[in-house]
Amino acid sequence: MRDTMVKINDRYEFPLQLDLDREDGKYLSPDADRTVRNLYTLHSVLVHSGGVHGGHYYAFIRPTLSEQWYV
Image 1 (tube, rainbow, N blue to C red):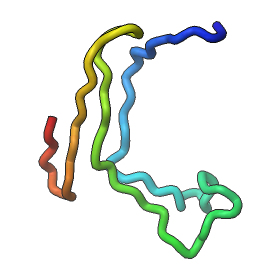
Image 2: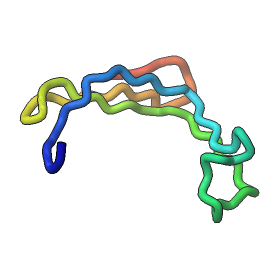
Image 3: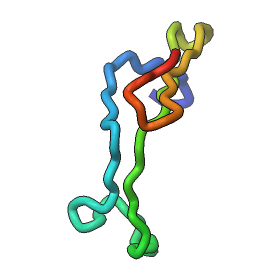
Image 4: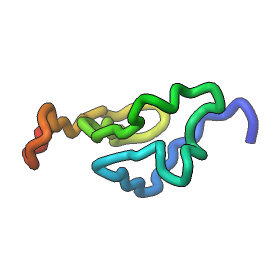
């Protein structure tokens, strides 16, 4: 398939924390600053419901480190 829009309907899961320093930093760019801690916390997920040519977007948002998520 080339030059065609395709909707991916697979399920994805995201970790609440993403540690790019793990496995000796293999997920970092070779010129990344290794003195900085590369630990990220998930605060939002954007979801599209519908087809390629239409639908709606909604977001799950967690503005603080609490367990409370908002839609």
